[in-house]
Image 1 (cartoon, rainbow, N blue to C red):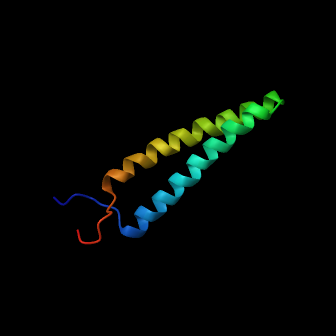
Image 2 (cartoon, rainbow, N blue to C red):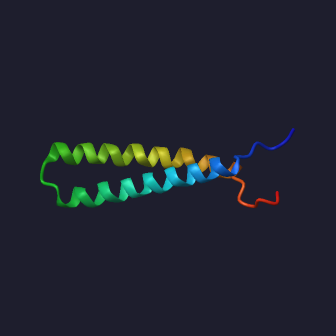
Length: 71
């Protein structure tokens, strides 16, 4: 049975989503430090936790990523 791999465009899309989620986590964490509204802080923390879960899931796709066009 052949190993399942991502196509090149799928690899790029996964990479773009990973970058977006990483930036989202960083922004939410930084904004929590200057936010004084506890409800807003709680929403940002929830966003951070959900983004971390999404990043972990995306990392599993990288094992099937093709980065060498000759393979």
